[in-house]
Length: 189
Image (cartoon, rainbow, N blue to C red; front, side, top):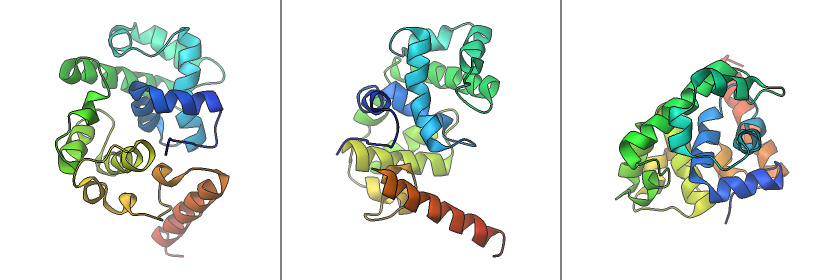
């Protein structure tokens, strides 16, 4: 089953066919609505005028990249910080994966290895790495042995905890409801 978020169809197509776009979207998924985060790589492609390329992003003039992120409408609530993070991600991919984002998961030997590879990327902590492993397994059928265990609760079938569980508007509402319940519980009510 491909990734089918309630965003522009062109953005979904990009996420399903461009591993760097998918990693970038997941990186940007913080402090903004997930629809905006996962549509941002599509907008970045339009602003660049061509597909994303890790080599180009890694070497991009930092101020020019910030300008691309900040151009209205901004790609993120924090365009300067997130442009830097995207560049750091691209630089890491160049250093460890020859610029090929898909090697993060196609060369993973197990779910645990996949999790460790993702968690080692700039901007990916424990929770984001687990969600991304679940997104790969549920949305792109990237399922090395132990992927569900490596993704923790995010890998459970029938759960509505994260972007990995969103396939339409209804599932988006269910994920948002779950997150609201977590926030309420954390606040003690």
